[in-house]
Image 1 (cartoon, rainbow, N blue to C red):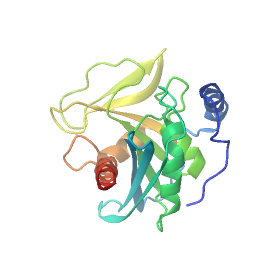
Image 2: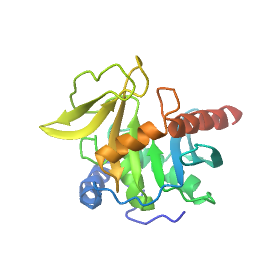
Image 3: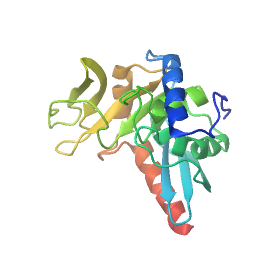
Image 4: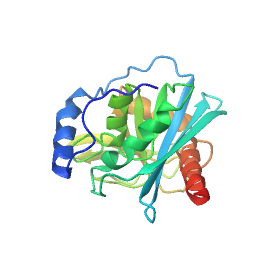
Length: 224
């Protein structure tokens, strides 16, 4: 997959925030997806002892969710941990992993936030712009915003709001389990994002693409 060069990665945290503020206006929050044949899950693990980021991408056929291929990359960490700037720590390794794929996914599920971000530009938005692909943020925990408790049934949802704006959906993917936080990345509406997340759930709390990607990078990390 090709990557658009939108900025330098050798930046300070302050410069990174400026880049987020500049690029957020280019994020498309309406559906521009087309036919979905392949989806991918993307995640990153950190080997802090060695100072490395391990990025993994797993591609699945949709809607069957049969695995098609996977790719992983390990590279030195070059950006500090700063809340709200996750993409500057993770995206360089993820882009290298995406470049190794033979199949270009039609939708990418990211283990992190998208629009539900202080500057409305989480890693799902950033990765979507860089790859020019529809992306969806599927986070395990809340970064910002307030919400009521969603219904306990699978598919139950509640809006995630900040300052009167709906920035995501709190979604129950399985009855009785903790919800996840779904937000738009790029080229997808919030309603379609929720629909696609439910379509890639297979009975577990975490959607299959990001769950498998998480297990993949942890396995690569253990093997060193």
